[in-house]
Image (cartoon, rainbow, N blue to C red; front, side):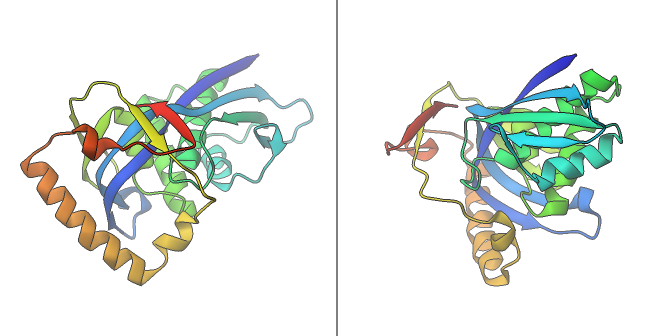
Length: 222
């Protein structure tokens, strides 16, 4: 038996880092949007007793997905994820990979987890590996979200917005873990994020100029 699930890519417009000794309370406040592009994951039971993870047909460590598997099951499975967003491009690939895997595993193995349970496991996997802070929360809400509180349970609102095209260019991977471990970077991110969040909460709107501008390389709907 094979089960297939999808999770959307996610772009964070701005964020404020909030760290806590409890990883489930670690996360970010801020705003972002979910995409039509993302990750489709197929999950089957392993035939050789080994758990394997494939990304676009190539075997991968995929540490965030591996951590998610450890949180949800000890049963050997084959994970085959197809990505339509670049890895390391700031489009939530690791979060979408973990979330789509969680959804597929839940059905395949009859885990009887709620959607929130699966989101929290994917968020914990992201935080534990330093691959993200708010992408799982954002994609769990869809649309143009405002993340009001870090960690779980998620506290979210949404800006009503019609679907639109988002244009982006990818010039190569950037390590999220590297950015989140740089104290100077974090101070700059938090300063800008706090100002943006304060302004957005005063006037929660999403014009074309604020949601994206013409660029090159690829388009997707949000």
